View (cartoon, rainbow, N blue to C red):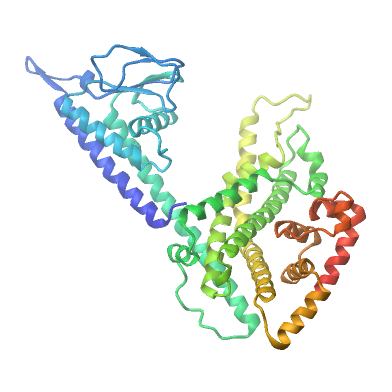
Length: 479
């Protein structure tokens, strides 16, 4: 994830590369002119061209060794097999190759073990094919030619600069939404506590927030990536939702517009709940990593900000589409009266897809406070468990020590841990509490293990034990 400052710097990098490639193109076009009998001719064959091959077992000459003959490769390189024409001069070719290599290293997805020139040319080729550019000649899945490498690269850089600026704007809007959500939460807390705190202090920015966490950026990204992968790997719909919409979700015929938006609404509700759970999981990991400082107000806000940023990225339409594809395959078709697909289903499908997207994007922004509440509950859970652990291991003296010793004799430490989790999560449904018990490694009662149960979540799904779980949680709430 890049910060607004990083996006701004990257946009200026592409602006610089655009100017360099443009200057090379102008120089090349000026030198590719021949005057013959008073006529000015432009020799297109002198423009620097790039040739690629994606064929299986391609025949190619190793780049930079023009004296060497063709060789047949056993495997096609991951980013294609690339070669250049001679260009207007040897010096020009080397300067252009230097610019290509430097641009390849600036690409955000540049693999560390890749050749920078090949990677730039590969990405340029994909972009030219996507835009059906006139800079391509004889292009196919197996390869082709880029007519003017410098002109094509300059155009690609301009496109990358525009996308970087758009990403910068999206990042700023996301940070503004996070700021509003946090400010609203602070006002609510102050109103409940009745304290007149100064709420005009400057909000933490993303950079300061991450520095407060004290977690290495690579480790932080690994935590986010782990939760992100788990979010999609464990994507599912509650059985009650599947049963409610089964007649529509598994019907080949596309539903009417009203039912279509009804399904979109149900899926959006479940998706925001999934985002809340994933954000809480990240908050719990961050709170665990910083538990010695968890009572510090700025640190809590730093965790809020990091987790809300994570939630907002999950709250994008593309991520939602992937999640929906995991939980249910919606393959509706426009079916005629005779039961056969309509000859023009694409336009209707595209219209419905756009309606779903607009509905989702208009609704998902309403859940910031729900996400923040889930994040805060996870932080409080970790704080409570940490405090209970510190009390048990701090070696109290006098009456406090005797009271703690007497209490520990009556209450098993694991039971105390379970009770602390329940009290830290008031109002949480029993099934979600079971998920919390499993994450916190709260052991099941010994007799339940003997009955073959392996987790709290599985015990909850067993009708014989569900009522017992309700009883345990009720007792823990008043313990």
